[in-house]
Image 1 (cartoon, rainbow, N blue to C red):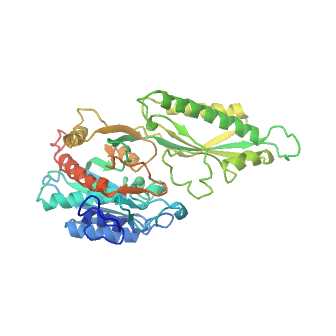
Image 2: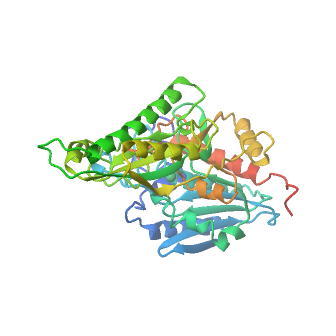
Image 3: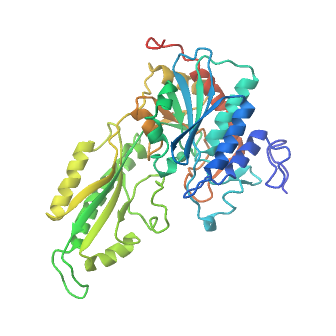
Amino acid sequence: MLPDKDGPGVGGGQSSPEGEDTSVSLFREYLRLKTVHPDPDYDAALRFLERMADELGLPIKKIEVCPGRVVLIMTWEGMNPTLKSILLNSHTDVVPVFQEHWKYDAFSAFKDAEGNIYARGTQDMKCVTIQYIQAVRRLKAEGRKLMRTVHLMFVPDEEVGGHKGMETFVKHPEFQKLNIGFALDEGLANPGEAFTVFYGERNPWWITVHCPGSPGHGSRFVENTAAEKLRHVMNCFLDFREKEKHRLNTSECFTLGDVTTGEYDHGQRRRGLQRYPTRNGCQLRPENTADSKSAVMQAPHSHLGDLQLNVNSTPTSKLLLSHQEFEKQIREWCREAGEDVTYEFAQKHMNQNVTSTEADDPWWSAFSGACKAMNITLEKEIFPAATDSRFIRAVGIPAIGFSPMNRTPILLHDHNEYLNEQVFLKGIGVFERLISTLASVPARPDEA
Ligand SMILES: [Zn+2]
């Protein structure tokens, strides 16, 4: 065992939890629950959360939105419960791991000598779940009474699209009863000193392009092949992608969330990861084969080629083409490729809702003001992929994606996902301040 380099209560290592901050121990305990797809142990998460609610003295509600898919809500009632409430949302599920690529067991929550905790979910987003809980625990221990009601919501299935989680729950009468005015949900780490906040998301479009062609054999030159058509559509997408990449690289004000991306999937499909959006959340993948390389090799022999495109389009005004224009462009590419080339959408989100970050917005000014008071520099971005925030914004509730992790590489969905315990602990204090500030936003004219 290496000695604790940061003094008491910090180090410890995996076999010496003594002296560890209790919040860190709780975080590591939660990380060990295998809420991992494709068969998440949601019962274990529910038992853990019920225990937390018990410790905090908060009432809970459990709503089974779909069979086996339960949303759990803890409610800390405010002094004026008729006012709009604050939602602290987090999802309980995590994406699969490829253990052979990990330095440590992905569910052991191993902590190294630097205090880096390795586990699936350290960044996405079990850290935030525990930070919310511990922030509320501290506020309650200080005897604080907040004006607005605060709901802590724990949802399943975010990582598989939220269909049996948030997407369904936002239409449920129990969701409406929560009377939410403003929501916090997940964000991403920032490798620098600043913290990133997300006020909108790009829209996932999953498009399948069908390219029928003449049957043939690789030993002859066959006309009108599916491969030629596929190549045309692929080239058009890749040219477009190149233009967007150029825009990203040449203008400092653009971030990944401001551009539209599309990507070849280098074998993710074969590895069973295709349902889980990657960090940039975008793949361009030939549908009829295991990976892009073999598709190019095999397509000349096939008489029907399907190309699956996964595009994330941005909702900001920095968009090169509007959504309507972009779809028109896809139609045009297919027409050029051959008359019988068609396309269809497996997913098409047209949601262009963004949350106000104007100085006169009361929620944003409370959020950003609290950060300023803590000397936190914020970088505002459009989330490069999709989170449950899109469903919250779609029902008209402003939502900010914020996972307080600075000085941390972005490792969600990646091998060896980790978070340093000091960064984690600092985040509890950040939420403590944010929650009390947001719950103190004065009653607005449209509120009772
Ligand atoms: Zn997440």
